Length: 163
Image (cartoon, rainbow, N blue to C red):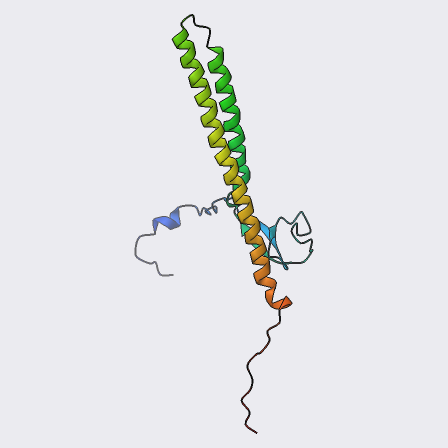
């Protein structure tokens, strides 16, 4: 047996360690065959159209599917409540014998309440607008996908046959 000359690679001296794949929160969910809605497999049926047929497993990042309209509506409710709480805290501070200080607290309380209500109203309207946009997008998608089924193509041109 002939001995090979050369240095053994450092890698061959180290124990082999398998690298773990990075864990991510990507889930596999089902895609409906009819309306192309992505839904979890534990539902069994599509929540949009009620069909139990599905075409593929789709990888879905759950953080990308957070309903933004619900999140914005929750922020609006929180801001509304914080405005009311700030109003009551500032009104509670009006126990000073100085009339100018009491007026300042009252104006600050009213301004806090008005600003918080205006911003939360803007958030409420934004969440409603987003909800309506999503509903219109779903209807347009459904219409576009099923238009040829309900409206067959009619050939309106005539053949140019010379008799």
